[in-house]
Length: 154
Image 1 (cartoon, rainbow, N blue to C red):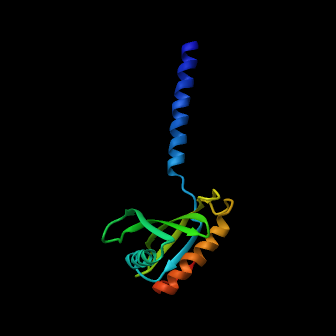
Image 2: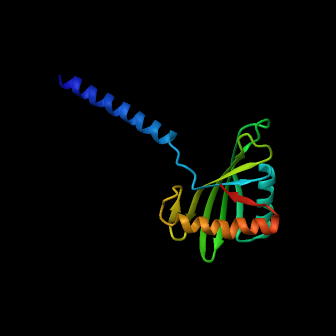
């Protein structure tokens, strides 16, 4: 009897741990904000790299690509910025817009102030709203003015 209870507890823990792991791995949060660019992913990536190369307060790094040549690659981009004395990090997911030719959907999935430890991956997290405002005014607006890349909110 005692041996049966111990086995049942072990099996329950293993199954529970498996369910917890699968639920955690497969869950994703909604993007903080979505944008659209009327151009290809490559045009967008090239423009932000050019912008970063002329601005010492901005660094851009492609962190991952998904997809294939026929479907166009999806690109994951990390942007680090210095705004005033704060170190800010943004993550973007860029992919070809569904059903649209030559349009790119850009999702802001992370806005994080490393200096003040605010923001994160969730739209309602503490400090995300001002970080999104800074992203639009300190990154997207100069990108439009200097690289002629107009990214509009959806």
